[in-house]
Image (tube, rainbow, N blue to C red; front, side, top):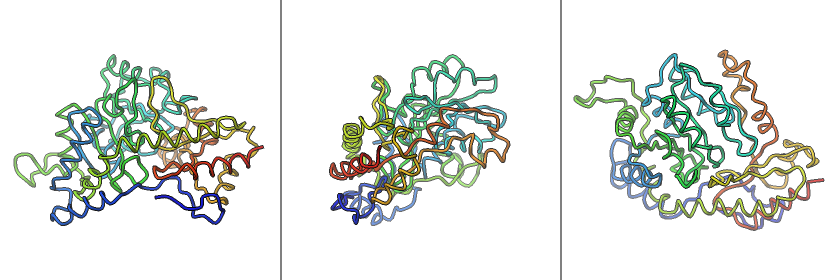
Length: 381
């Protein structure tokens, strides 16, 4: 989706992100509907989508499901996480990364963010480990990888399961390895604002056949392997529909193009915003390929306006933005449960208060990005 006349205040609002849907997605979805297989119980597109996405991540198995949140829950269940266990999670993340642990009855243990990548600080993980630790959930924030070699070394030494939350990082790389395919399981989201979308939807990728089999059973109410309707496990109705999978198959034909467009948009922003006082740009470490799911910036005192005031001014100029995630130790729902009250995560607190992301949709034009950047320049000191 593109917007005409981006240099006028009367333009339509330039959104933070909009789904990029072509006639191909419409055609495939129509085929799925006409086939009669429209639910998640059967249909050729479900298998195709799972196979295509697993191959994209260099893994053997793909398990589709209803959302990225569902993907995390299925992965935690497959890993055998239970009451009394502890799981290492970043505090600077979407709440779904922590909910999956709580839903399993386990205890999430928070790790602060790095100053540069905004991801979990892998250097702090060791001090959070206890005899109860069973897993680590590294989250590749806004498309930049966690430093996975350190995470995997810790996991190997302590016999921990690694569940990558790659919901925002389709196609990202750590030392040339595809994100989601590095840990024991990798979870993805296909929500409307993700790099590829099925409207709603998710996927878990893995090389572990037992995990894959377990998750396929759990997503379908654990109907039973021997006799249908004979349930020996507590399953979920977390299926992805064949219609959604059809859209996913069409999106996968352009996934590499989408990733490179995200990186191109980031290069436009980098070139225009790099010399503005008080603006910190997203990084790309030497060992990383950042896919810039969202192009985030930090606004410091030198800019002249605070983060919230800048967002308000941009909105007045027809530019939509979003503030950064609120760290988990500051979430009222968790505090009401007695969680994280004494956790101190100063880096995440600072990033959260200073950060916003700019329009980042795949359909953005250079003209629109230039308009956004010119407005920001005009608003700076």
